Image 1 (cartoon, one colour):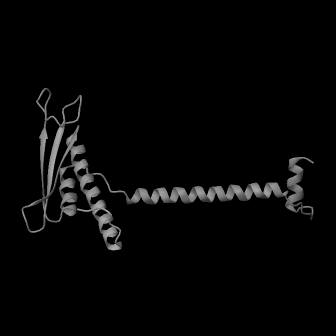
Image 2: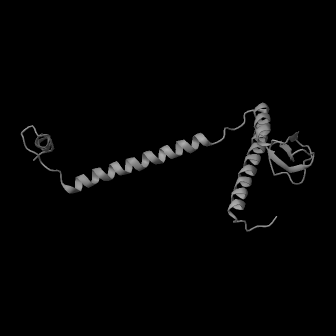
Length: 158
């Protein structure tokens, strides 16, 4: 029987019903299951994508974000190195002039420095983004350490 003829029989127009072979039914169910899994994977990816922090676009955004991330105060200093300028020995190798950003986070009710870091980047915007990412990483580590301490699972010593 030809394929169009099979559809006519299966449609019930002639009053009959031709059951689909078990193999075809299994393939259809498998295809539906695969599409469901793919939809959930896409949904999970899009959900995590929305949770990612937006990159800072300029110094004003960096100022606002760091103000939120460093509740007790912070300070940053940007140094631009021109072509042929002497750079510190710990600077990464680069073909273009570098931007050095040194930042400090202060302790609560004190002028004592809690964290001091230096980041290098090819542009000021990338240096500011690196500073914000460093601080966000610190916060993530602090949360992990706090959760481990609450559960009594600390294996390191300060």
